[in-house]
Amino acid sequence: MVIILKEETKRNIYRVLISMIAFSLPLSEWLLSFSIILLTIFWLSTGDFRKLISGSGKGKYVFVFLMLYGIYLLWMLKTEDLFAGFTELKLKLPLLVLPLVIGFSYSIRRGDILFILSSFIAGTVASTSAGFIMNAGEVFSGIADTRELSPFISHIRLSIMTVFAIFSSISIWLNEKFKRWRLLYLFAGIWLIIFLSLIFSFSGIILFLVALVFSALYFIKRNRPWKYIYIVALFIVSILLTGILVHEVGYFYKVGSAYPLPYDSLTLNGNPYWHDTLRADVENGNRVWVYLCEDELRKEWNNRSQILYDSLDRKGQHLKYTLIRYMTSVGLRKDSAGLVSLTAADINRIENGTTNKKFSEWNPWRKKIYETVWQIDYYIKGGNPSGHSLTQRLEFIKTGLNLWKRYSVAGTGTGDLRKEFYEQYRIDGRILAPRYRLLSHNQFITFLATFGIVGFVIILFSIIYPFFATSAFRRYLPSLFMLIILLSMMWEDTLETHTGISFFVYFYSVFVFGYEEKKRETKGPELYY
Image (cartoon, rainbow, N blue to C red):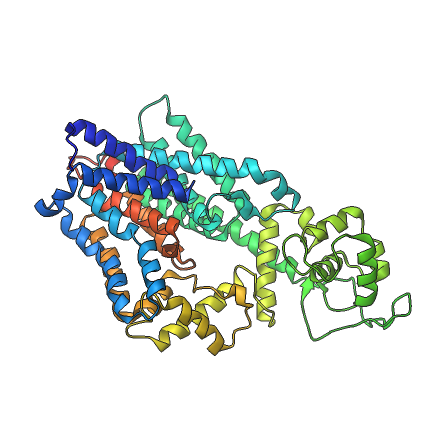
C-alpha cells in the first residue's frame, strides 16, 4: 500500500526522520534502530522505492557501495557456522538499508544538511552531558573509570562521534550567518572539547589532533591571509606536545631512591623479604618486586580492610598487585610496618583500584600518559598485557595477521571469523587471558582475515570509488568524516558494532549519495558541507 501525500509534506517528514537517526546515534542503540526502521517503512509506504527502477544521478554509485554488503552475502558460501553468519548479516543490515533509502529518496539540500548536523550535535551534547552529570563525581574521585562518562554507547564510539561533532559545530559557527543561534554551536564545540579531555580516550585525542591538523591545512589552502597564523599555531602545539611527552617519559624512567643497595634480608619482625631483581617493573622510579613480605602484608591488610588481600579491588584488578604497586609508588617497604603507615585515604584509594599515589595529585592527562608509558614498559619487559587497553591491541593485531596468513586469498568466511580467531589464539599460544581474546581491533585486518585479499580489494573499491567519483572529497566535512572513519579503523573494529556501522554508513550516505550538488560561480559555504 502506497500512501499519497503532498510532495512538500513527504519531504518534511523525510527530513525529520533522517534527522532522528543523526540525533540517536550517540544516545541509544534502541532509538537508532527504531529510527532506521521508521525511515525505511516511510520510504516503502510512500513509493520512493520506485526510484530504484527509474534510477537517479548517483544510483550507480549506490550500487557500487552495496558491493560491501554483497561481500558479506557472497562469503556465506564459505561459512561453516551459518548461525553466526546470519547474525553477522543482520548486524550489517544498515550497510544495505541506509544507502538505498538515502540514495533513492529526496535529495538532501544545504538546509537539510544543516538540520542533520544540528540534530547530531544536539544528540552528542545530550549524551555527553548526561554521562557527565551521572558519573562525574565517581570519576573524579577515582572510583570509576573515565569510560563511565559514556553510559549509553561505547566510550570509543562516543569519542569518535564527539570529534566529528566538535568540528561540525565549529564549521557551522564559522560559516553560518544567522545570529540568534550561532553562539550555541560555539558553546557546543567548547563543551565537547572539554568532555573529550575528561573522557580521555586515546582514540578520541589522536583523532582530534589529526582533525585539527587537517582542518588547518584545509583552510590554509583556501584562506591565504591566515595561513601563517595556522602554521605558527600548529608549530607551537607540536612543540608543546612533544615537550610534555619527553618530560613525562623522562619522569617515568628516572631512577627512584626509595630502595638503595644493598637490600636488607629481614623485616623488623624478623621475617624474610623477597627480592626479585630480575623483574624490572617500576612505580615512580622505584622497583616493584623488592622488599616484599606477603605474609605480613596479607595479615595486616586483612585487619584494615573489608576487601581481602587475595580478592579483587573495585576495578576488578587483583588487589594484592594494586597494593604492592601503590606502596612502591610511595617508596614504602611491602611489609607490616609499611602498611601500618598507610592512611585511611590510602586504603580507600587502593580498594578503588588506584595503583599509584601520585594519581590522586595529577590531572587526568598526566595520569593517562603515565599509565600508557607504564603499559608499554611493562609489555616490553615481558608482562602480560591482559586488560591493558593499548598493549593488548598489539596481541590482537598479531593474531589477526597470523589468521589472515592462514586464509590469505579468500578469508575465513562471513560467519567463521570469531571461531577461527579463538583457534588462532590457541595456535599462537598467546598469554592473553581468555576473556581478553578479542578480534583484531583493526577493521582492515578484520576484512583481510574474513574475506582474504580478494574481498579486501573489492571492499576498498566499494568504499573509496563513490566518495571520489561524486566529488564528495572536495567538501570539508565529508573529507574530515572519511579521515576520521579510516583512521579509527586502524585501531578499532569500527564496523563490528551496530552503532559503529550506522555512524559510518549514515553520514557516508548523506554526504555521498544524498547531497544535492549545486553549481556556484563562486566558492561559498557548500564547500564546507
